[in-house]
Length: 277
Image (tube, rainbow, N blue to C red):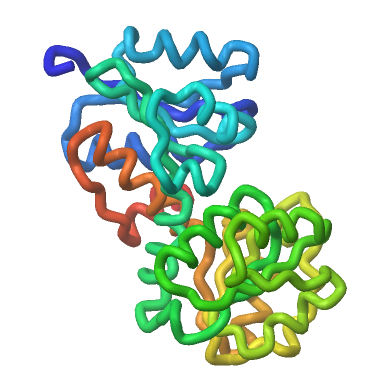
C-alpha cells in the first residue's frame, strides 16, 4: 500500500446521515495524512462481494453500521474476542496477508467518553444501571464487565431480551421489569440510557429518575439531540452528565490509527467539527 493513497469508509444502509466521514476526513486533514474516508450505501445482498472488492480498490478498512454489524462477523477471517462477545463488529481491517479482521470498538468508545466527560468516575464504586438491551447495551455491558463493575442492573421494554443478556454475561447482571426500571436506579453510581428514547423523532424518555442519586454519573448514547431529556433531568438532580457524542468520537480513534498509522486526539475542536459549529 506504500505507493497508493489509503482509503477507508463506512458501510451501511442508509448511510447519508453518518457523521463519520466528517470526523475522519477532519483528522486526515489535521494530521496531513494522504487518504480519504467515504460513506458507502451497500445493500445486504451486495455486502460479501463489496468486502472482497474493497482491498483491490485501495481500502485499508471500513467502519460498519446498521444493518451489517452482525452479518460481517460471519464474513470475517479473524474476529476479536470483544467483537465475538458483543456479537457485532463496527471496525474492519483489510490486512496485508489478505485476511479480513473484525473488531468492535463501541465499548472502548463508551468508556473513554465517560472518562473524559467525568474525570472522577470510578466504575467500581457501585452498581451500574443500564436501560435497553440492544446492540449498544451489549457493548456497554461487555465494557463494564471488562473494567470491573461488580453489579449491572438491566431493564428493557421486552424483558426477554434482557434475560438473554443475563444468560450470556452471567450473574453480575440483575434484570428488572420495565415497569420497575426507575427502582433499579437507587444506589446506582453509573446510569446509562442505551435506548432510542429521547432521540430526535423517537418516543419521549418517561422513566422516573426519582431514585437517582446526585452522586451518580449519567450518560446517554444518543447525541441527537446532544442534551436529551434524560440528561437534563439527571443534571437537575445534581448528577454529572456525559452526552453521547464522545462515544462516537472515541470509538472511531482505534480504527483511524490502524488504517492510517496515527492516533487521533479527541478534543473540543473535534467535537465542534462533527457538530458543524
